[in-house]
Amino acid sequence: MGRIRTVKPELFKHEDLFDLEKETGLPIRTAFMGLFTCCDKEGRFKWRPRALKLDILPYDEVDFSRVLDALMTRGFVVKYEVESEFFGFIPTFSKHQVINNRESDSELPAPDESLYISMTSTRAARVDDATVTPLKHAQVEGKGKEGKGREGEQKGKETLVEQTQLDPVKTIFAFWQKVMDSPKSVLDDKRKQLIVKALKGYSPADICKAIRGCSKTPHNMGQNDSKTKYNGLGLILRDADHIDRFIRNDAGQARASAGSETIEQTNARVMRELMGASAPAGDVIDMEPA
Image (cartoon, rainbow, N blue to C red):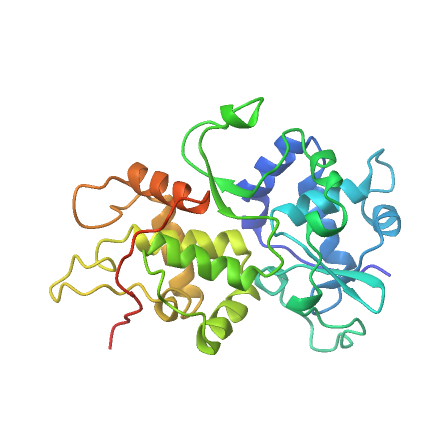
């Protein structure tokens, strides 16, 4: 049975959802908001495409499994398996919802990173089915107009999180290492907990935007009185205010770092590194303000 849910006005302006809808030709925005009514208080739902379609898009002629797959490629939903049954959850559910305390507790099993289902491990062919342009990586909005046609013609897009990754925590940490030129840093328990906590309110793409936004903030990249870099995950993901601020910095095209490197050059460098080029042997950067 569906539940009454509310959404914040900002959700209707979500550019990544709009981009995905335009690329796939699927009713992504309506479906995503409709999924909220099918979730329990923890943002979990049973991964049953036909049943979900009857609740969300009963009159539309659309393969809802394609809709779910498209949302999955961008990190808007996560699919997991428990005892041979498939479930899904919305990582940003708590960000958009204020749950009534009287609502009953979830009866669905909690997601565990080891149980995540990747597109390539089970239904790789459906990635191409779910999009007009085959998705090689999860993408978020960049500068300029969106390209059309073949993969090589796409412009204004930046690869942030590979959709083939089973573990978003490791993927996000690897992205931080690349952006901050800190290949020697270790994904310890403290950093894992920081990322897991952030994933409860933000999508993997949003967290990567925040990381990149920090790299575009002069003060955090050493342009300050103490000439110290404040770009550790503990600072970037400290709370919602910090994450939101760095996401805004990413969108605002602040200067990326000291020196002559432009934002475009920084983004190009990160792109090359994520596509497989060797990372610079930079210092271990994990400093935070006292």
